[in-house]
Length: 75
Image (tube, rainbow, N blue to C red; front, side, top):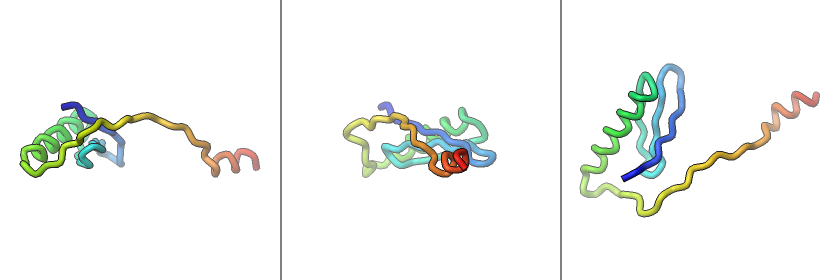
């Protein structure tokens, strides 16, 4: 099963989040955060009542204009 992992840095730790299952974990670096997320997902899926996504999600990026930054540049 392939799932999505979204990684962000929060202070000194990396947070890895799986949006399909809404499960997150953390680690000192990206590799540890992903390894901990994988372990958390595997433990979750051991539960016979675990909800498994029936369709894939689509992950993309969008760009938005930062109104505050644009306003301060024009001032």
